[in-house]
Every structure is written in C-alpha cells, then in structure tokens.
Length: 87
Image (cartoon, rainbow, N blue to C red):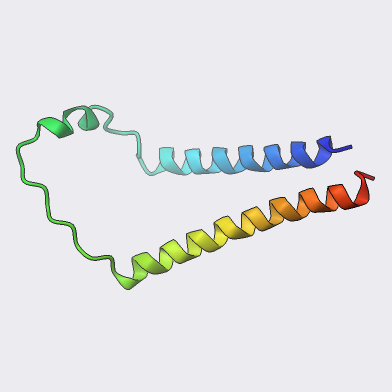
C-alpha cells in the first residue's frame, strides 16, 4: 500500500543524484584530486572573507524555498496516505 509512494520517492531522488553527478563530471569537478591533499601545506596567505552580495543571499533564499517545498510535498504525501488509509 505504501510502497509505490516510497519507491517513486526513491526513484526521483536517484534520478536527481545521477543528474547532479553527471553535471559534476561534465564540469570537471573531479579533475584535480591531488589538490585538496596539499591545501594545508600551502604558504600563501588566505584571502580575507568578503561580505555576501545580494545575489548570494538571493540564491540562499531560493535554495531554502526549494528545501521547504520538498518538505511540504513529502509531508503532504504522508498525510494523504494516512488520511486515505493507503487506498
């Protein structure tokens, strides 16, 4: 009764994961694996942190909105299943 909803949820999550992983491969995110190993040994001064621009805050709000929308969809699916008895 509950399994089709959860299997659909898992399949959608898996497809999203494969898409993000493919994007990372396409954009060479894993190209230089040895760089991270030597970052603590670099003697270059670290650039000072700058204040976040309005665009960065806008991106954060959009990501927060997507997260809340995902939670809302998940909770609504669970409540629907509980209210209808899985029929």
